[in-house]
Image (cartoon, rainbow, N blue to C red):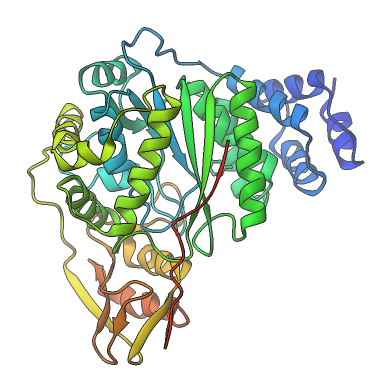
Length: 422
Ligand code: URA
């Protein structure tokens, strides 16, 4: 077996054999296949695709490159959620304790933000004392004691993906559906969850800008989960405008706590409950009532215990940015568009996100929305408040918002959940 023949097979539109896939993933992880060879193969896959059997084998090979966690000794069924990423997507924060409060165990391995999308770990790290890095034993302890844990994936999980994802990031090969699907699912399957709900975002703030691509990604991932014995379903959800009224780390934690306290923006509550119902159903707990667990405070209790178990102080004041700048509505009428991607880029430029994975983030930075599409706005009234510790970023953030807003006469409300794929 050699790298050049594997690359040629895919370059010429052929199908990779199981032996070729196993060999190339293992050899790349060991360093026997060079980055430039893997880049060529990733580009050939992006251009020529892979069939279901190839993607399934590719995923299995990435899982086999590292450890596979096992939660079968837990007394509760496990359920996890993965979002393909969006702007203001803080759903994991209320969702994990909510689902745990309803009887499932939620082992949520999460990531950091890159580019215009935020990362769950960056958000939680704005809570004083909270630790993302747990050993496998600590993770299991929190899961046993609290029922939900949100932490960073250890280095032992799908190391082939870690290496390949970093390579794709710098070679223009992130956007291949087989590579995205296998990357996400190798980590989720290796994590050892029994069931998985995928929140596949569609719209300007998402990876997938249109419903057809999002549905193909969702179908591919559901197929992979099923092939590997994980009960998997997907919801396609709207990401044309930010979720909720905040985009930025501490801002989003504050909003999530509002949801857990029984308030919060309607779209965040609706999506949290929709995903909770899917997770509980997939975990074999169809009679659990997540709306009641939000209303009676049991989800909030679970949140507080989850934060404390990872060193955080749930009562601590959250960081606040030093400077603010208000963006006003350009006209009076109904807000018909507030673009998710533009708000995500603005939050990123204000310091809420990072350009390179080594960069720090500002806990207090971000964008606060005073109106959502469908709301009536008045010319000159506050529409957005920008938060940052680095006020020189304001002009740059305002420039990102130049075409983000439209005010008209009428707005047709769009649903948050667009479709479901099982
Ligand atoms: N998230 C991942 O983990 N992998 C991808 O390829 C894209 C998004």
